[in-house]
Image 1 (cartoon, helix red, strand yellow):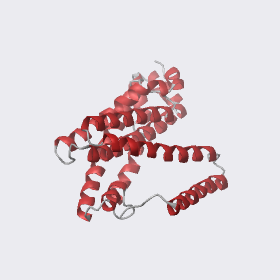
Image 2 (spheres, rainbow, N blue to C red):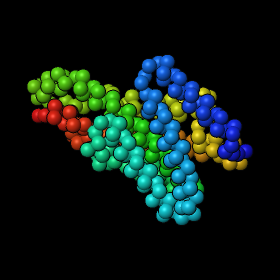
Image 3 (cartoon, helix red, strand yellow):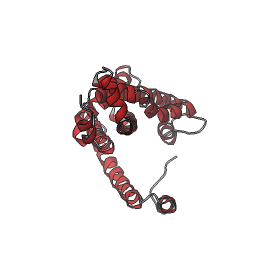
Image 4 (cartoon, one colour):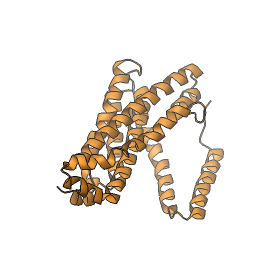
Amino acid sequence: MTIEPGWPVAFALAALLLLALGAHRVAGYGLDRSVLVAAVRAMVQLTVIAIVIRAVVENLWWSIALVAVMFATAVLTTARRVEAPRAWAWAALAMCAGTVPVLAVVLLSGAVPPEGIAFIPVAGIIVGNAMTAHTLAGRRTFAALREEGSQYEASLTLGLLPSQAIGEIIHRRSPEALLPGLDQVRTTGLVTLPGAFIGVMLGGGTPVQAATVQVLVLFGIMAAQAITVAVAERLIEARRLLPPDLRVSLVD
């Protein structure tokens, strides 16, 4: 089964975009422009990436280079989203700690063949979910640090080190970044049929093959997100991964 570009798809895309814009307008979120920009970018970027993948998919090293570009884009995106663009290198470290071991396991074990057609989509899913977890962790913990500045100062007066004082505030918030991923794993097959599963089915694979690929990806997502969030938490405690305002306020 394949879904070909044509008038039915064009109609569906236009209708879905109008639904999204209508929902934003009725709710008064003020994100109409962002929705339009995101929609246009998605169409352009996916068209370009489809052409690029077709060109590099036969060469593993070119495929790895493409994944590196995807990773860099994810790092810059999450750094901006948590309002810490100057700390992009630390965001990269946290995400690298989460994604590299996972991709190494799936490649070195032979679970994913060393071919671009298999490696690129799996790597893209892992990187994308690590980015999401990092963004959720950063936004939640930074908000907590802003809200509980007095607790931070009180902890210092009690003799705690800055890293300990920060940890007291953020440690109970960090796991919240992992809940969406865990819910996705927990409800797969009952509530959702994720992209990897559908992709294998649409590509002509058997249900067993589709389920195998999806379970592998889901386990990889759990590992990548857990490590990414854990490393990000340590970097926040060390006052490395912080937005400018917290870098100033979280002083000894």
